[in-house]
Length: 114
Length: 112
Image 1 (tube, rainbow over the protein chains, first blue to last red):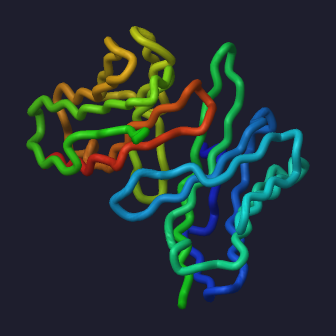
Image 2 (image 1 turned 90 degrees about the vertical axis):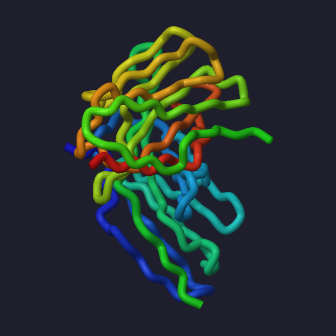
């Protein structure tokens, strides 16, 4: 059973508009969340993260929102640019003994249309 | 330049022929991990290592082996590859487990 779910395999947005990518999780013990971006033929690269003690983190055009009660995470990209077209993975982390485990969602392909 | 280097980028092999995918990082990271990416399943962890000589199974370890004899290297070994191991593989490292991961460029493996 997937603990981190990205229910939209793909999303298309017009350039200049807002892109909203969603992620749901089931494990209430997750306390750190990350978004990665992946271009074709490249490895994923870290984009932005948020701790469970916050509900919002912003970095330039990228903002991540966390709704703990709904177990829901979203990434907002404003304004969207064609170079943002990529697969976006959300990931959630939980402490497990002395270590931490990271679980990824299945990814959302974002296409920003010029 | 800080990076995670995987080799080869592409590999085609036949069932049962042992192969090794190499991974090296130059950031002195303690934590290293292998993932496979399959359509609709995202990134699933195969094995991870929290430090030299410390390795542990991830979510999908069957059919794989790893070793961590040096801090910088974390090879993935398929002793007897099977077609269901055809996938895109990523090596990753981080300063410590649970922190931001740095990924290699991936290895596309096809097992015929």
